[in-house]
Image 1 (cartoon, one colour):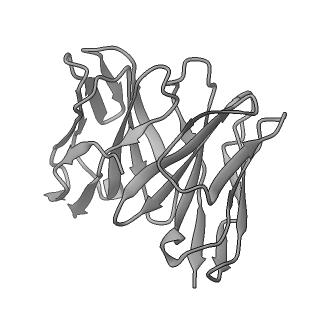
Image 2: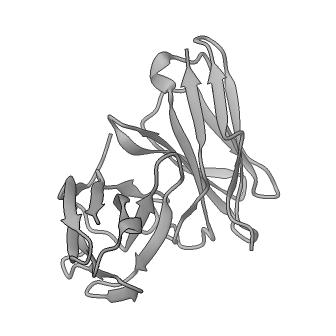
Length: 114
Length: 111
């Protein structure tokens, strides 16, 4: 079975721009979670989607948004980029039935904001 | 942001030595996961734990779900150079649909 895929792997943007990241979960997985990883804050939960519905959201400003499609693929969007948004953005997929299912991560998208 | 206490923060060990690390939480969890992350890559799942007291092995790795459900432990036996990396614990409570991650343990193995 193919693993979680994320595109693009690397992205460079300037302040004020917006960005969209994509995640394709493992086949059969219906839950997709997004995390932000920085050296200072570690791995922080952004949001989780299951069957196109957001079930939980972390403490991030409204500039961070996401969505999930009927094929379980997910996108996250960051608008009006700030320097502090530079991070590794990780997507994880799981079956999603229990709410605390085992999560499998993709390779991440490294976002650099200049 | 919310993070679990993970210790030690980093450790240097000799090849062949055993390694122990642990994770503690103020909340009760239903699931504990342990991951290893190499630089620039996503975390790779090592072991999943679903029941208090559970002890699970994966090769040279053994992890335990604490009986209080507020802690978990990971042991690596006979470490080898490729064990180098950052190890993370993660805990979740049913119905929250999210994991909280530990601060990480950076492991360096001296050949």
